[in-house]
Image: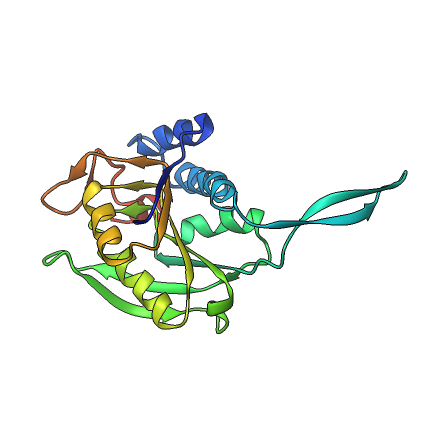
Length: 209
């Protein structure tokens, strides 16, 4: 079964509290999401392999650690996932970026795919699928399926908050995919929103309704 990693670092939890606050406007919300995404990326990459290399400082020669040929692809689920990409790229600037467009039908709560494009060498990369809200889990389940169908093998999901229902759905369909997030909330409401949550992440990012 996949692992669920809840990042309890004080900075992550503090920023998440600010994002939950209904008084936080789009500008600050965007900045906070990017900052939290960077902090979560730090944890996601904790087990990346390194090798010992020789390096010359201004004074002498020593050894240090360097990543061993890691290739990364960041794949946000449109549109809210876009708000996480900047934070990931701050730490992994060489990562390639794909995009998956999926929205949730308001009547059926089922995912509807409308756009997908990922790097052609996705099979060679560690894939980070980004979506701030893991609610019903439908969109993330479909995004992982899409990446797998195109050869992706090493896949991790980055989110901000999740509902237990969404986590169960992801684990049921993709038990090999680990999840990294800031909080697991109580439940979904009748409209499929996470409670207590923070509202619609896309609307709060871009000031829409």
